[in-house]
Amino acid sequence: FFFSSSTWNPFHSLYSFISSMSQDFLINFLAGGVSGAVAKTATAPIERVKLLIQTQDANPKIISGEVPRYTGIVDCFVRVSKEQGFGAFWRGNLTNIIRYFPTQAFNFAFKDSIKAMFPKADKKTEFGKFFAINMASGGLAGAGSLMIVYPLDYARTRLASDVGAGKQQFNGLVDCIVKTVKSGGISSLYNGIGVSIVGIIPYRGVYFGLFDTLSGYNPYQKDENAILRAASKFGCAQVSAITAGYASYPFDTVRRRLQMQSEKPQEEWVYKGTADCFGKIIKDEGVGALFKGAGANALRTVGAALVLVLYSEITAAFGSGK
Image (cartoon, rainbow, N blue to C red; front, side, top):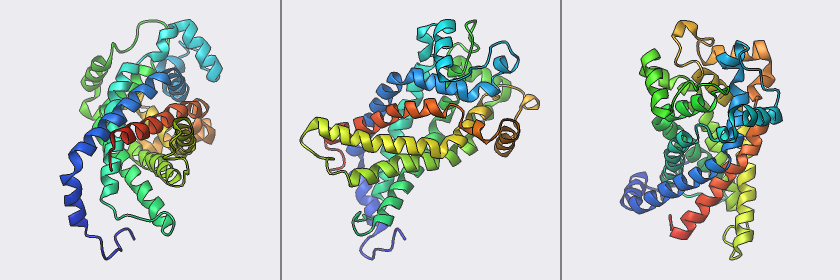
């Protein structure tokens, strides 16, 4: 399907790509990382609320009744500000940036690198092939990036989901990783990696694939009017981010639940694996529980859309991929 063109030589394309990769890869890496760091800092309060709501049914302090449940987005915003202080909305943000910089940078760099290994497809005459290539390159890039930075993703989840106004469970990134490894071994840092890879493929596939496809049809993509160009890109990015978020959200919920028990001995785990976690959530809480925090996540997609726009503008300014 992808490689049906008789004029395309995969080995020649790979050689040509590698020989010209260094400059473009560096630009893509830095543009993706900077875009991600800026967007994540701007949307950190929304992201923390989303995580607190999403993981509260696996949080020991909430399960025990020590900390009351959050009843919704507004309640969570009000209580975090009141109980933990306004700065608590950025709890775990430094770790998130440390995690997100390489994640987003590798995502964009790998996506463009992987896409370059496929034959070109004309969006007007080969739309199916054009869309499938965008989906495949985005999904594979996301899976590859996740394998590299997963321990940082785990630490970010644990730091951001810490509730209450008292002493925090972890004193930072290093303390979180060290305590987890001491308790459950190195493998505990990768709890939920399987469902994460399964979930990241449709998320990144839709996120990048739909954006690249919509961008290909965007008549203002290269408009000289900077405001019109940025606004049209943001519209494409927002549609892509919201669609991707809902398409993969149940996988993300299961991943967060599994991460919440990583530092405990296995005999104390509530969920024995991905299938068990899916089953117990649906049985005990209903299918809707897989989408807890999805409302806040929809608001958070503004940051995801901003990342795509910033990346597009930065790479265009530096001439990457030309």
